[in-house]
Length: 202
Image (cartoon, rainbow, N blue to C red; front, side, top):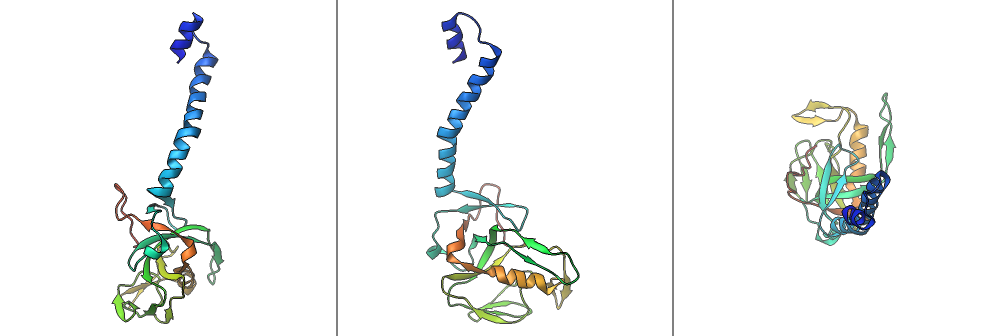
């Protein structure tokens, strides 16, 4: 384009024109082509989400509907921010935004915790770090029981072959995040996206 203008004008383009013309062309391409195409890609193919509770990105399939989610799926969901105050420690703030986790229970499922397993409708499944040692609950309608992958600030201690969080406040926070409303669903993670393989193990 610059060469054509120089040929028409009969003299070389000035420095300002050499800088501004490519910038204007790039801005037009960016706003009219790249941004609409990228938005459509995120809506219909793959949406990379930065997980607020971890230092990583998870690529999700945004076409999956909430009705298609099954036990064992790894999903991303929106979580409202909140703050906890562990005894004798600094407050921990969980920022609002996308969170990632594994679906253990569907509406109506009975979830029971034991020191060695999490029991879903009577079937024992491997525990994930931070899960309670006891108690049970029934998953409410229009919700899932999803155990989030959240990095606890402290490693915790080993008790009975199971790693427990150093303070029960964090376990309560994780349990609070596990009741996921269908309306907060963002998408199901791809099993593999190029070199990115999601994991629900923190």
